[in-house]
Image (cartoon, rainbow, N blue to C red; front, side):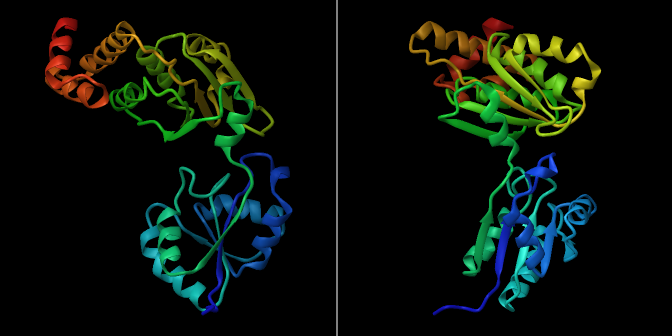
Length: 281
């Protein structure tokens, strides 16, 4: 039996250039009764630019769970609402999946209004294989944890996409070089769709130098598109990868802990990883 519930529209907004706002997105935001935004101060500027005056309410990581019941009742009463993020497509490294999950369970209609996405935009200009890729979001803020994640992805053959902030991008690049080597191909996309958009394509070993050449290159928002590992079938290549991974881990962790993590991330047993770690000390 058809219910009379309202609809939640998940609406993509521009990642920089306001000209990328779609007609359908504008019409949707004009017609809903409420708009839920990650940061109402940021989204208010967007609403004013397009002359949209509907109720704007906050939905972010710290209140999402508490807001679900309120939003569900609002929609069950027959009202429509929209969910937007600060920029780009909601739920992609942004709040909202818990809300969407619970509303789906409640049989409330959820409609995507597609548009800009920094992940897809960066992939489209990367010049790196895009037939298979993984999106990893933001890497950990601390170097040790960041290296562990990179080491875990060292043998991943698919293209990897990461977000990074301006105050960590240089340290992140240094860690990528240390863990994966200087020859891995990378595309760094900075300030996508904005006035000062810049793109670096080439070996990651030269990226740090490129960033250092102009301090302006360290400003803004970054997407890193990292080429996947080459397929390596021979034992010597695998052993080399194991050594590289363990070298990074034992620089930051006790040997026993490093060996345990390495065994979880590779085909090595704990004992094999421990013996190899001892030989590298």
